[in-house]
Length: 402
Picture 1: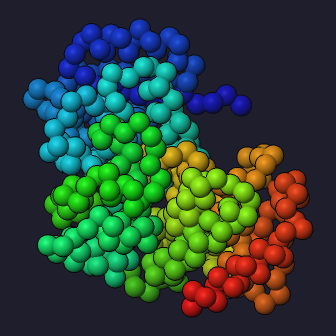
Picture 2: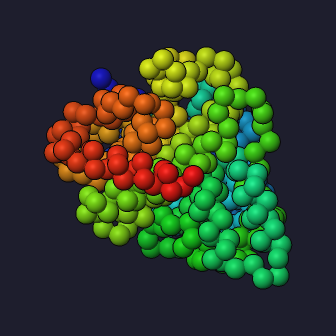
């Protein structure tokens, strides 16, 4: 089956840069169709008249700058993926765009690199077949945080003795704040040469004053204030995510993964159910979903009602926010790692096992691995004979966390 072409709109007031993009298109014409605009106003006309998968814009333009264009594009077509090509950008522009742009790409940028970033994100979006979901998730600027942690963070930032360590520790406990801070720190605005997957390190790099501006001024985090009578709460998701992160890191150690992979396993555990937070944007979903009842998991019910699951929804959001690929992949496939065809244990293995063990220990007296784990995948990796040992460890960690 032929892969669909993605429609990309490039915006830059420098005609030479646009001509350079045009000359490069022949190499990518199999997967891309491109259009070009020399101003924000021209871009908005094109966005209002035609469908585009992605918008790639310069930040510095006369008349309407990149921030103004992104704000208007989000209103007109909330489903369009928004990328900024950034050269020298002021601190004020960086902060203002933090809730508007999905990813920032350094300028100048080789066309191969630009293509890889934009095309990877478009393909993640292709996993969501429902236009309503695409519009909702692509348009999201923040995720709801646990009220207690959100208020702790505000109190800490308003204190004269606020420290990066304390702020980082609060953010690291909350899936929504962790996702957003990693999006920001991995933005090309901050010029880092490595991907950052540790929220505490992210806070140290950004600095306490930048965090204050982002949280208190731009309001990059939000307190959950949604429906109160849902079958699952932000608090339940938070508790589950934290313990999965801890168990995933412990299993990663027993799989002899390196220190970075063990930390990524912990962060992936914290983030693995961010798609459940996205489900709060679809109230009618909760009228149909079953939460681990009569042998049916929420995962199965999501496919019946939405045609996708919280795993793919969360992976898509983290992907368009530019989080490290290994974490995006682990979150996207944490229920069905076998589809990736791996031949050795890795980050996704640790996350899949941790999530399965936690659900099994909490939800069933008659513990059957096959109800919660991808057994053919684990058999292929030669891990089945270690499951009893690891589920016992998980049970101990759960008891110690209560």
